[in-house]
Length: 390
Image (cartoon, rainbow, N blue to C red; front, side):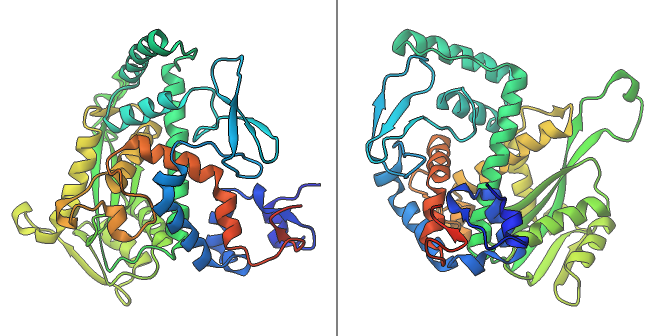
């Protein structure tokens, strides 16, 4: 009988749980609750992640791995469906189909087109039109049988992909012990809503806000929290999410002199522990605060073609993918040609900076090999409650 990780951790440790069944969500839960180190050697896990990063393009990029034994000794077999490639593992004889970064019958090139379209700020209708044009050329050249998702499916896929990418990034941040940030800045940006006729005359509710928390030294965007308001509650949520990713209290927190922002900062980063530097200055007087203004401008420019958003969920998807791309794929001269993620020390292969295709391929392989990464740091031996095999 299968038991959940929560049951195992809380009351039923005498019954084994298969490490192959532990998900990224489970590990994030273990890291946040402080029980991860009871079962795993964090240093060994981080070393395995760094080896995976260093060897990715030589040993893992573009390869298929058996989901049962994680072997790359596989062969492609005939597939009569004509959509997903099928494989057979020569080591354990398991048959399996190609797995993308999210469970879907659409091919990897469709996922790539959706992500890059969202990252470039294209509308769902424009993304679908581009997919149709791409399909025509592929059918003519490669005879590929596939389907084009509807606009609703494109949005749903984009939302699921953004959520998946963020969870993997959260795991990487938490497993290395959090982000070491000495100074953080906070500010808010906004985007117009699409208003119905009945709401056009109302002065309130015209904007959605995106509250951004930034590391001043590496320009890494720690949190970008979309909200309907910019009150104390919204800033408190943003600061709370940021604290979960930090290795400790920063030395200072700054931003524009907004009462709701200051109140939220005092609640989560009190003046007794963190220096507050909130200033109401003219643009040419802001000096260092211009760093967060420029990052907000980067977010706006990235999703700038969509000036209005009908729902907060749509804005969240566009902002999430924009922030991931800015953090991981955009090198900065001020950082010596490195990306913010590289500057802050997140273990990701940076050889192909700027390539969403390489990033998504890394995510695909990472998910398949996740049990192998956990096994590298497992403290318990087979036969104990948390074991590599049943």
